[in-house]
Length: 464
Ligand code: UD1
Ligand code: MG
Image 1 (cartoon, rainbow, N blue to C red):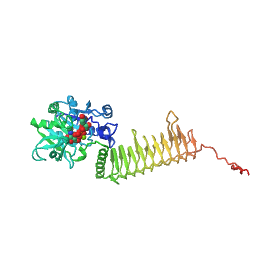
Image 2: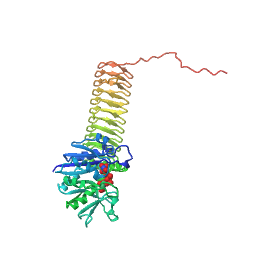
Image 3: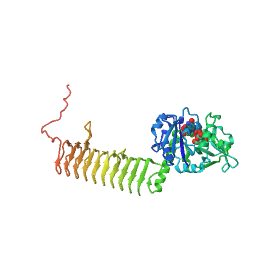
Image 4: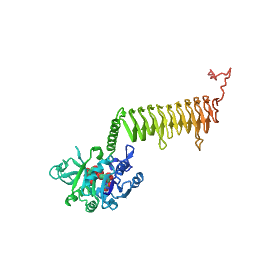
């Protein structure tokens, strides 16, 4: 059965009190609409139609998905009016699934179950029983409030006191046979408390036409919660993070505190991984067996191999080119690894050391206050405190190549392009602007001068 999906995303989101359209606010690193699109894409619909309105240009520029098309709704006259705008793009012979752009955590399985319940001929509603149903559309059933036949949805504003006591609510998600849906949409009116075209009025129309109306249920409340305010956004973020933390712990990851973890992307962990509190993982991060991440680390797009230890307050930003930390490497505290940092086995990077677009081979060490940019560093190099590669001449970047077993003394400036041969020693305080030969001591600094008999100036005694 052919499937089309409509995502309603035209609303203003007044309660966010933000210049950013609501569906572009981020949860776990992705916009709300991207979450919905990612889940929707797994259903392989022949068409996904996003209805945009408020901030339409910004929304349309910010998201993409296979088979995605946009339609504009202006002005926004209600959820029924929103789906009316999408109707011309929907295929008559199939089923249409309607989702909300501001309900980000709906799971693909829940969507599939709803489409299956529709079976090409029923109107299927996703409902949930809430202890506090205030504000939601109530599912009105005949007779038994749980098992009775569905007669319609009544919006909170339009509900009688008795209807307001109904705890089964409509989540805003439905699946309908497309041809019938189009017929019902064309017949909607705005004769209600809000003066809007309610999509939910199609339920009573289906009942009148003797089309079966069925309900499926979301397993988890978080799946159907919408975002209307910064408070709700933060609440949903914590629910999402909690669920993710539980999945990691079920897989054996030891989190010091599941409430103090933030994953804004994908975190893949081997066996016996330990993560201390307040770490943020962004993009794609892989942690090998036995990796330990200490507290307060921010790690984006990085692969950290088995047995490596990352000390507190380390910042890794792999951006597009990634960061790799080799097996048993020690990094931090207070280290900064930028795109293209590639540390081999047993490499040590200590406090206040910055590494960018540089590789360090096995056993190399830069333990204090140093910069390595555009450098190739050989095995067992010792890179002294305060030393830097001067890799940028104001127009171009140049490489520094440091051979194996080189000892770079403290506070050196290595002016690139530059090659230091294997086994060389560079004297502390050198500004090196030409290559240094292998195996020798190279010193590039003024010789110390001592002046015998020199005296320090003294103040003249005050007159009188
Ligand atoms: C809707 C349902 C209600 C349900 C609730 C679940 C209707 C009439 N009511 O109410 O039964 O319990 O969702 O959260 O459908 N939108 C547009 N264009 C518009 C209006 C809304 O695109 O003209 C979009 C919004 O951006 C949002 C979605 O539709 O993504 C839902 O709209 P919203 O105003 O939040 O509907 P509710 O009043 O919450
Ligand atoms: Mg809503």
